[in-house]
Length: 185
Image 1 (tube, helix red, strand yellow):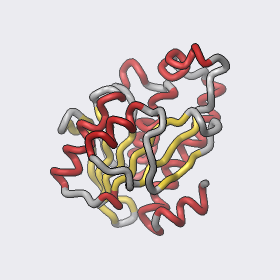
Image 2: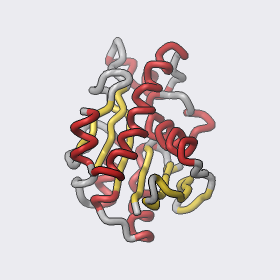
Image 3: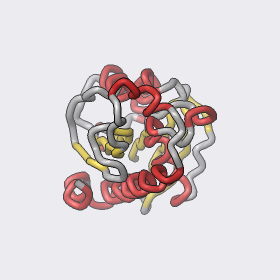
Image 4: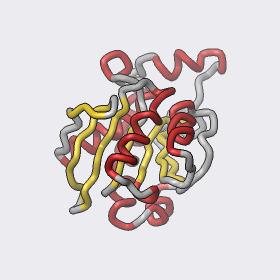
């Protein structure tokens, strides 16, 4: 069983913002594999289903980004998920628009959602997929850049990264993380 977590903020206000790329990828996977993410547990929306005969749990924490780890640790403990079956998906300023990067381990960098996840689960060796959102023109505009609605033209570019991240999840489940890294990094 795989735990696939997309990081973001509750969608009513924050849908189609750069900081919600993780949620957008979960929504994409949900649509493709007909897995409804509409149940509530551990302060998260989740759904269970199958990707190519492998059981998966899709999760969107509803704790706001900076406390995402609170929901993640509860799912890991309740479902007894092995760390090699954890995939966390989130936005990354240091990856170009529409690109993705996959890693098997590492630090959280400057991403507060990932800091929360690592702080709660107490290990860093799990798969993460970073969806590129690029940098704001001015560093002082970072908060607005992350949390304001994305212009449609730019969102169309970001949809490439969302789609690739969903495909990478399938590749990881079918052929392993190394195979996905070779294809998408």
